[in-house]
Image (cartoon, rainbow, N blue to C red; front, side):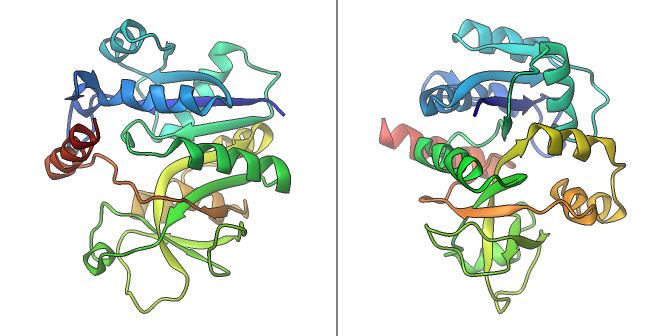
Length: 244
């Protein structure tokens, strides 16, 4: 099966504008994510963006990028436009890797792709165990609840995604910014209007659940934090500079 990785990215994020071009170890966050995606070696990698500055930066660092419209309500809608523009009709799976997750592990990207192929799942994502109790209250850490307990051998269905939650809920995990769609599932997803649930919670994955598209969840080997705030950026910068 053929997989295409598309990384949606834009400069006008509400909480931390300009973050894709923030540098860590001399390389922009978006180019760190592109490098991770390429190193996973599961398919071609493109960045989809409305900003020429991001395109220039990605290309300067050896990546591929495509310009999309600036009216997209979600990253997934942006990805679909990119696929149409690229004319990629011979692919089976589309991986949506969030442009603000530079700590995503290569083995986790590969594992999600493998599970999608093995199980013929329509839509899959990753989650990790919640270790810090404060995370349950943090709105920028998305939580996912699954039908069964997550372990490395299972790929259970998600029952809900929330921004705030109680730590007493069973089978609740920290959701990571990555999705893998069968191409026809992605086409179906973008054909639906945003659901009230999605708009209220600012979580596009709820559009899938609200339209009876099942989402399977795999356990990632490591926890990552996305860059949503200045505080996140400082924390990630420290981790990545220390590792290098």
